[in-house]
Structures are given as structure tokens and as C-alpha cells.
Amino acid sequence: MKSDQPELHPARGDGEPRAAPISRRDFVKAVGGAAAASSFAPSSRQAEAASDGTPEQIHLTWGDDPSRTVFISWASPGQAANPRVTLWRTSGAQSVIHAVQRTYTDGMNGQTVFTYHSKLHDLESDSTYRYSVTADNDNKRKTPFAASFRTAPRGRRAFRWTSFGDLATPVTSWSMSSPQSHHAVDAVERFEPLFHLLNGDLCYANLNPTMQPAVWADFGNNVQRSAANRPWMPCPGNHEIEFHNGEHGLSSYLTRYSLPDNGTRFPGRWYQFKVGSALFISLAADDVVYQDSGPFNPGPHALRPTPSSSHAPIEPGTSLYIRGYSEGMQTRWLEATLAAAEQDQSIDWIIVQMHQDALSSSKTGNGSDKGIRENWLPLFDRYGVDLVLCGHDHDYERSWPVRGCNHDVGRDAISGAAVDTCQPRPVLTSEPAGGQFDAGRGTIHLILGGGGTSAPVDVYGANAQNGLPQAKVITKANRPVPGRVAGVFVKHGADAVEDAIWSARRNTVSGYGIAVFDLDPGPVNGNTTITMRYYHAVGADQAPSAEYELFDTIVLTKQHRKGNTG
Ligand SMILES: [Fe+2]
Ligand SMILES: [Fe+2]
Image 1 (tube, rainbow, N blue to C red):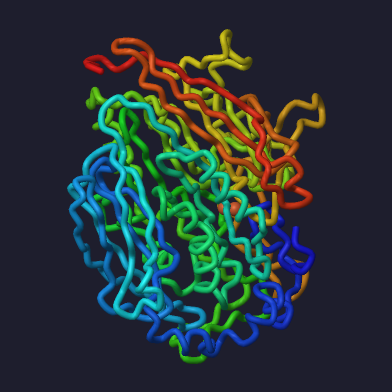
Image 2 (cartoon, helix red, strand yellow; image 1 turned 180 degrees about the horizontal axis):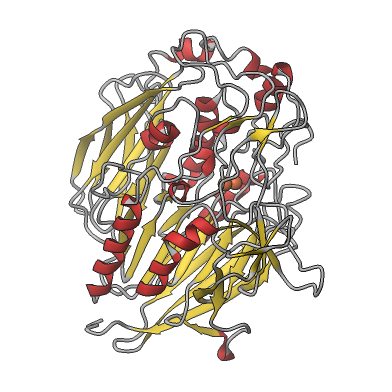
């Protein structure tokens, strides 16, 4: 924990402000130090940067087909003139791809953000490309930024991906940031994955509400060391939701990322892509979770946008709660996507990415959310999702494979009355013989929330009677309510508890780590495997550490789908 943020305790492990009186002066101090105090006027950097088109925050994402399409995206301090990518193809041919500009003006401090996106298509699979990024007003145009990337293989081929969530930035003046997020980016590079899954809570800009674009810039420039070399595929977390920043507060996120199209009126929030024999589905869990964990002003003072803005002050007790925004569209899309995958004999594996957790027994974090259990776990069961990769609680927890749920076995956290938490039902409760999980039997959930935030929460719940794992479960909306101090509002945590009979492994040593997945297609008509190795940063809870050591290994195995031809 940072020592300079006494008012913004991550009360539920995720940076949500605990209800405590916060003066306007303290709020400014907490959200960004002295820099924030002057942030309502355009910064001198912004004025100087108005004509600066130098690319920064450069990052890659997959297009609809990762074997053929890659996006190169970046930002620049001012509007870029003739922004473009030069691509050297495997044949040696050189082509120039002009970028599309997308901008938004931050609703809190009035800063306009310029981003650029070049779509590279008709690429060859499993091939390395070199590229450079520049503009006519690039201060480095004589030696523009250059890097290389590799496209995805097609068919049943081996590949590696990595994953964590909750990264923040290395700039410790921002709330929730820590030097560990620098080490986490280096860790991705060390394992050289084909791509990285970033499971939400990218930079916590919404906890620094008067300086959001600056926080995003620090995040983008930190991840560039890896994300310019390989796609980083994100999903939105609760800290991507920002006051006065577009529909559902997602303008900062959506403007910066070009992602596979989902064919709905909510582009960029959820999507799918296929690499080799694996289908990856990225979901926006804020659409279904009960918990209210987006931006929140506990009071007692209003949070006022820059005077140049037409936006209203954020009054005490206001939170941006977006549950249900797609009115079931995302869940219908998910079911259609899974049903199509069932018919696709080239797909052996289904991996889901989302931010919040259906199965977490963190004591100091958020816990499990019944909204995901109700909306999506039945679909994961029906269509045999193999892995669910999350973040949100800043720790590592692995579930047993689960199928179905037990009803009415939870308890109200206060009264002790029976509550239906839809307790997931494990299909086994010991490590399998030979160390290999039969992937057809259940879905394994992994909490990978140890990217780099300043708030590890690797403390887990236990049943006071028997010492066995116990989980908090959020079964209803915890909207702000008046606190004990006049004008100050609070949000209560999880309302229920259950025995975490589904919890297989919890890391009490370190809240930080990275999961490395190696998919082996196996022999034709044989078994295919995914080996997951979780590496944690020992000692990083106390002091940032660049050393990551192996903590947990599991192997999932299954037969190829019918119709496999290798
Ligand atoms: Fe987080
Ligand atoms: Fe979160």
C-alpha cells in the first residue's frame, strides 16, 4: 500500500474508496498529489504538445483473424499529421498503411486525447513482420519507432500465451500504481508469448479522476515495451469506467483499443478470436455483476469537472453503476458464439477472459459475484468452457473444475439466514492422478489479479468453525448509502458467505504473478494439452521485485474434437 493515500483505502481490495470523510483538499492529494491540484486548467505540457504528433503508447491487438489481421494503435501528445505505419512483409516488400484517428475529450479535465489505428490485413500466418510508426510531425521521424511482431499460426499448432490483470502504472504518484507494474511488463517479455491477455483494471485512471489521460499515458508507455512486440488483448474492468466519459464511461478504453468486431451495437466491450485450435472469448462482466465497483464519490464534497466542461458536478454518493446495460445482448452473443464453436470441429479449447470473479475466496478483496454465476456459468457448463481467466481480486486462486451449482447453502453475512449463492459444484476435490485434469469434466477458474497494483490482497477467507476455505459472495447490488458522517456515503461489501468447496489453491505468499499457458496440439487423433504455469513475485507484497518463481502448475488434457485431421 502507498503511504500517501490515507483517504482512499482499497477497502474491498480493488481500490474502491472506503467510506471515510474526504475533504476536497484531501481528495486532490489522494488522487494525484500536487499535479492534480492544477489539473483543471490545460497543462503546460498539453499546450506545448498541441502540434506534437510523436507516436507513444504503441500497442498491438489482434483483428478478427489473428493469423491475418493485426491492429497497430498509438497516441500522440497532439494531433498527428499523416499518421502511418510502414510494414515490411516477409517477401521484403514494403507498404504504408495510413492510420485512422479516434479522439475523445476527457469529461473531467477537458484534455483531448488523440489516438491512431492502422489495420494490417492479408498477413501471412505464423510469420514475423517488422514495422515502424511515424507522422509528419513526429519529433523522431528521422529514426521512427520500429518493432516486430509475429502473426498467429493456423490449424493445430503449438503456441504460448500469458495472462494477468490489474496492472496499474509504475508512476507512484497515481493511486494504485506501483513499480511492480514495470516488472510485470518485463515478465511478459521474458516468457515471449504469442500474445498476452490483460484481464481488466488496466491503469485505475478512474481513481485519479482529474488526471485520467495522464494516467492512461503512463500505462500505455509502460506496456509499450511488450505490447509493441505482441498483441495485448484487454477486457474492461470496473476501473475502466469513468465519470463523464461516454456511454458506460468507457471512452478512454474504447478510444485506445481496436478489437475484433462483435457485430453488436456495443463494439469493443466483448469479442472473440481464434488462435490455432483455441477459441478465446473476452467478456465485459460489468454488464452482469451485482457489485457496484465503478467510479464513486463518497463525499462529502462534489467532484467538479473542469470549468470549461459542460458536465455537471459529481455529487456525493454518486456511483456509475452499469449492470444490465446490454439488456442481455452480451449473454445472447456469448451463447451464439459458444453454440457456433460447438459446431466448429477445428476448435479443441475454449478460454474465457473477464475481469470480475465468479469463484474467489479473497477475504480482503471483493469475493465472488452471483451475477456471473447466474448469467454465464450455465453457458460455460453447457458448452464446455475449459478455462476462465479473471483479475479483480489482486491475488492468485485456482478452482477445482466445476459443473453446476448447489442451491441455498450460503448464509447472509449479517443475519446468518440461508441465501442461495449458486455455490459452484466441484467435480473433484483433489489433484488428479498423474497431475492431468480431464478438461471435459469441468471449468477451471483462475484469479490472476496480480499484475502490478499497489494493493495486493492475498488474504483468504476461512470458515471459523472448521478452518476450511470460505468465500464472500455478492448476491445483490451494493449501491451507495448514507454513512454515519453527514454527507458521506458508503458501499457495503459482500452480503453473503459460502463454503468455498471449489477452491483448490490459494497463494498466500505473494499477490503478484503471471500465468503462462502452453498449448500443445498433440498427435493427430491423440490428446491435446494446455499446461498452465503460474509464476509469482516472492516478496513483492513488501517491496517491488523483478524475480518471478514457479508457484503452481496444472495440465489440462482432452481428446481432439471429432473430425480432427491434424
Ligand atoms: Fe483491480
Ligand atoms: Fe477490479
